[in-house]
Amino acid sequence: EQRVADELKEKELRKAAEGRLAAEQSARLAEQSPRALLARARTVYVYSDTSYFEEAQLQNELRKRDEFEAWRMVIVDGSKGSNFADILVEIDRPLFTFTFTYEIMDRATGIVLATGKVTAVDGNAAAPKLASRIVEEMRRARGESKDRKK
Image 1: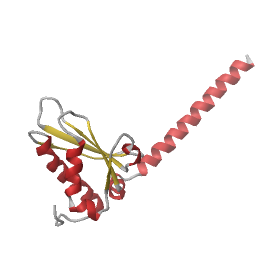
Image 2: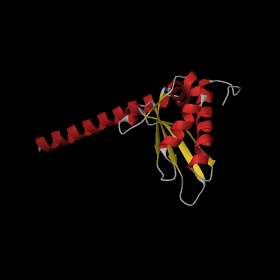
Image 3: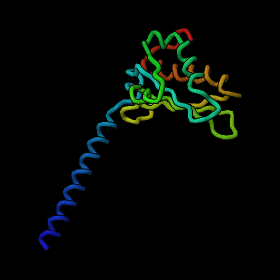
Image 4: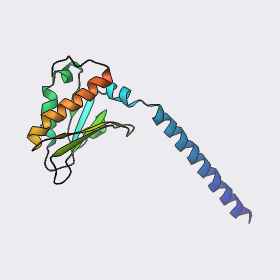
């Protein structure tokens, strides 16, 4: 009986400790500002979740942007690139649509920093629009005005 009681007490203590840990982690995440995380980002990993869009299309368009050079942004690629990037940009295109969606996420915390969509016939037409929207999200996060060259 004592052993069973001890096991029950141990389970309760473990559950309480896990609950406190989860609450602490949640509080730390809640203190993170998506805007500040996006403003601090220096490395980007692009991932396409659709066969209608290749990562290289957006990577090339982002590299063309003057802001990327001014902000000293770096695009990482390859199978391990997502492990080193500050932010992850995921591109998708729902089936039977011409809508390309993007989601910018902080890799370390998993916090969604920005989302949006553009309408385009194909990936070649979508890439410049997506790059423009993503740079605009970053510009707003950094508190910069829109008068910068595109």
